[in-house]
Length: 354
Image (spheres, rainbow, N blue to C red):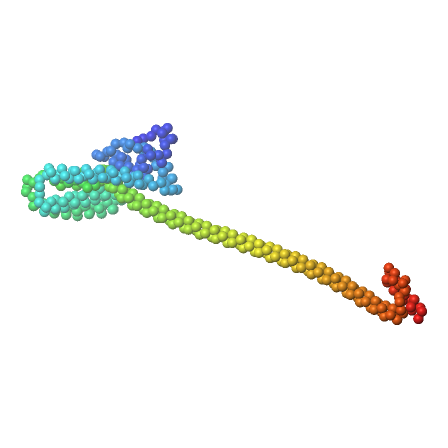
């Protein structure tokens, strides 16, 4: 389908309305145009500018349009093969039955006819291209094949009745499903095998084989890329899990370190508190011991002073008693309320008298 200028501006080569086989230069509508099997205009968009855009874009990235084109050509070739089998079936029903030996001889003649036709078509193509020497070599090969064909026709004629031999035995071309006659001349064979219809089907079939190979290679590459990406993803996940495990281990280690530090700090504080309490107890004990010892010393001094005073008093009383017994009755003044002063005065008086 051809596009107008406005449509061409809107549509891109990636649009579903664009014929992917046309972009790959293998659409049967283009290849078989003007032949006996002209398919008419394609239902999808054909435009050479879009093909140029595709060729530029396909160098930068893989668009994988080969799969769409392969499906298109497979459908077309399958339909062509179906028509070929139907033609063979009709020929088998309409033509006279012949023995297997005669059929094999007829098949030999058909094969030689095809070889002659292909060689003549190739020689004409080379001659048109200006390669005269190669064209002459192929024509020499054609003469050799013609001699073989003549011998095969003699064998076939001798194995058939004259009436049956005159009947045209047809054969269906396996490439383009066209009918070929057993007695076709070289010009007819050259026209068929060098014609646009036969060559077009050869081009389509070769392109289909190439597309199948390309699609298989790209699918294999995609599978490998997908497998590699999956392996990379799994490796990244394993590394992530390992990294997460290491992070968790570091966190656990840090948590254990913090707990240990807190435990150490708590133990240190406890030890400090214990030492502080011990020092306080020791200080209180020492304070109590010192106060007890001071009190004890004070009490000892008091007791010693009392004891000394009592001893001194006892000695004074004893000396006084001994002196009174020698002096006689005591002086009443000595027994005054202040015993000490009276005792001292009596002692001084006695000393003065002595």
